[in-house]
Length: 339
Image 1 (tube, helix red, strand yellow):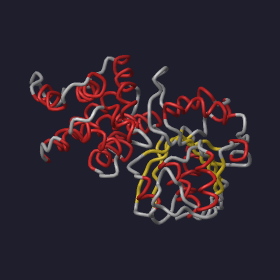
Image 2 (cartoon, one colour):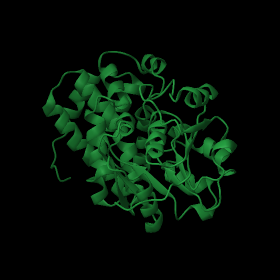
Image 3 (cartoon, one colour):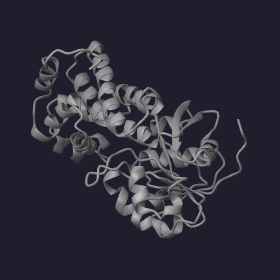
């Protein structure tokens, strides 16, 4: 593994994934500053080396310096990770942009599609940031629960960029014996895989909550991958990306993993809870609740059929019984698997 000089890192977003990545990079020897929206979270991280709201069970590397003020976090950083929820990604980045150092490598780590534009988070970053930041812009995605990353459990992800040099630089900055990074030129595919799998994982949670068995989960993941691939290819993604870590890998993890917030939402919906009850009881709502709308908006733009995602939408936003949704999916018109 290539040795990497310490890189000054700024992480924008102290949620579960942002805290996990900050801890990982600090453990790798990089100086890390972390922006938290909540001042009390920043204070607790500095004082107790614990995030009191997200990733609460992990003792964070004591070298991490946290702040709720962007001008205290971003100046001087040579690598900036954007790990904000997708629905606030643009307004936070607009504030952050004024404090980025020229030449900083920006890495979009959030998974989602913007409702107003149907842009991926990397595309939002390109829309907000000056042109000099565009070519080296990177996107990181793949099967990576934050808790397992922070616990140094073996993890593999993909970093995509139009600049092979920038992708390689980020790859080596992140790489440790427990965190393996692959590079890709397919930014669209890597980002869309991370967004589209979220509503599919809610569907997997519904299947689990209804106790429909492993046959059903296997069918859901396989047909979900078909949906993901159709939509991604319609946006210009490469087929191999959807069979890789950012596509199939992340889909399998989020559909099956007990740490998946999206799967948990689906399980609770299947037990009869409303989406409002679930939202009110979760500190950080699963991205799939929002992504269900935006994925379908993008699919409508591109005239792509997404029956599983449509079924999830009906359960979340129209109150349909999950068991009825499963029956509707199973009794759709018969067709070739290759269609």
